[in-house]
Structures are given as C-alpha cells and as structure tokens.
Length: 58
Picture (cartoon, rainbow, N blue to C red):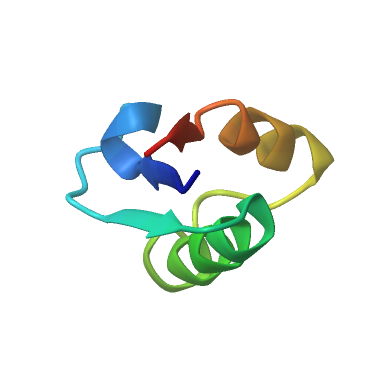
C-alpha cells in the first residue's frame, strides 16, 4: 500500500504533499522538499524519526 505525507500533517502552513509506494522513496521526496523549502528544519535523527511518525497509508 502506498504511503503519504504532507507538511500540514506537521502543522506547517505549506500545501506540499507526496505519495510513494515505499517509505524510502517518500522520505527521499520529503528530504528534497525540506532542503528546498524549509531550511529552518535540521534533518537529523530526531527530526527524521518525527517525520516518519507522520507517514500515513494512502
């Protein structure tokens, strides 16, 4: 089953969302978006774990 996530899931005022077949592909999309649009977020073990907890079955 596909996985999905959106910035609004994290309480951000951002319309971005993504869906992918695997968590690995979805997290790649998340990292790309964070680096491009949310430079205030440091991608470290804690934040990545937090982001992964927001992933939903699509």
